[in-house]
Image (tube, rainbow, N blue to C red; front, side, top):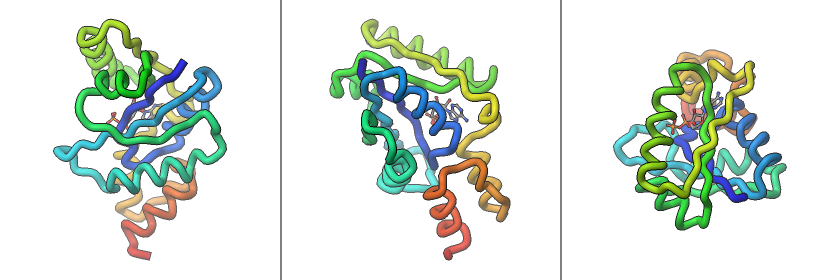
Length: 159
Ligand code: ADP
């Protein structure tokens, strides 16, 4: 089965990577789809986010990285996929994810959302937390893949 893993990935963290790794073992083909959202201010451009995901996930041969805009179900149909994966960290994620998966089910009954529970060591990890810590010069080396660490240093310290 082909599955779409959509998100902002601004930037990809070890929590996302854990979901991708586990999804690649369970599904035949995984498409990591970066949302192009012009209303949401992002640190990295869509192209940079895609490149960082590719560099961080070079070991998976059933993985594709792409960008999308508009409705997720339209994108899933375009990619011939009937499944969406989202990660669940804590109770705080639950309400949003539930709302989104029900809305998508309403819009297209054939597409299923699979919610994957985050690995315990990544429960607190988010892209926003990483950006906040990095912006103040804090150490995020255990939170993000190497290419992201380098990119954050360049963004924040102009190295
Ligand atoms: P979005 O803005 O769509 O939530 P994110 O890049 O923040 O985009 O997250 C994409 C998906 O990855 C979401 O389903 C989110 O819950 C999940 N996710 C984010 N961080 C983690 C993590 N540390 N562990 C597991 N899942 C995560």
